[in-house]
Length: 104
Ligand code: FES
Image (cartoon, rainbow, N blue to C red; front, top):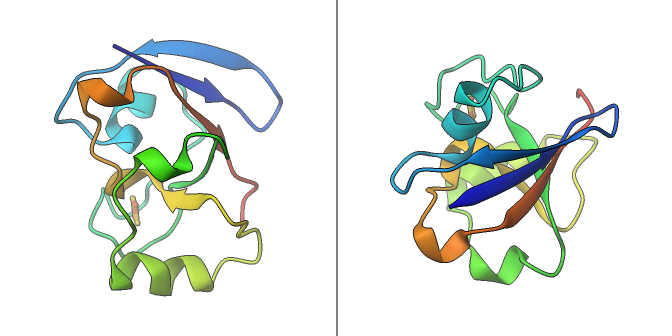
């Protein structure tokens, strides 16, 4: 399966994506180093902010209340913003497209 990531500079990478890993882990393991992910996926830093392609956002499980609270604190939040550590990749998400959000 693949995850398609666009960086802040506009470069796009097609990364091998494993079911069960988070989108944050897939991006980092794929060698794209723009996601700081300072808390390591503990849902406390919001430095793993990505924007999901608007045509695909409905395929994802909804954000938890805690994720929503962190997203609310981001000035760069847009309607399809998510925290990449909270998106568990599944095979049905093959071809998911995300863009790394501007730094807060
Ligand atoms: Fe910190 Fe996602 S890595 S909230």
